[in-house]
Amino acid sequence: MLNSNSITRERIAAMEPRIRPFVRHTPVLRVDMADFGRPPLAVDLKLECLQHSGSFKARGAFTNLLERPVPAAGVVAASGGNHGAAVAYAAMRLGHKATIFVPEVSPPAKLERIRGYGAELVVAGARYAEALAASEDFAEKSGALQIHAFNQEETLVGQGTLGLEIEADLPELDTL
Image (cartoon, rainbow, N blue to C red; front, side, top):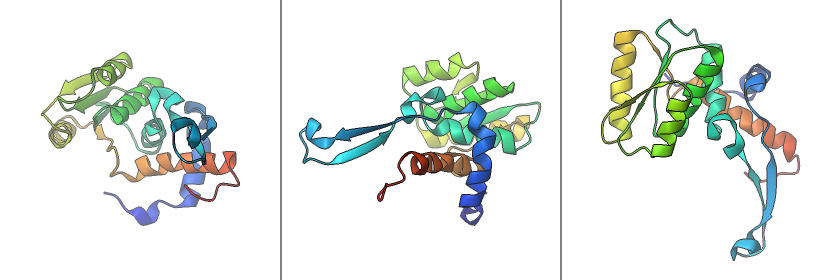
């Protein structure tokens, strides 16, 4: 269960060196919105699309696998794509079995990425809520560790390391 009071800057800062060997420090790109037909405004983009598995979600996936005991049954997650790819990638890197439940509406490219990381892929239901319910049932029956995409302390602590990187890369930043 999620306890947002336990997601502190100190906890995030303590996790950052633990996941550092497994995640990329992604670059920041400054763009002028005038280049896109908008009023002139400098915007800094953190290119987490260059992160392992293609999104910032790898940070939370690794935090879960490093902070929580992983049973022999491995890990399970429900996802529309990015979280599933991140959990599959982290499990592959750390030598754990992964089972990822996705809804029918998931993009084929994301499904291929999940399979490419060696996870067992299960298409369950038309929407995310159905895939989540199926993954929770699987976790209960198999003993696999459920890794929630957003309602999990460890997931959010890992994602928070992105904020530390942004702060280090852009110390003058005043709005996020």
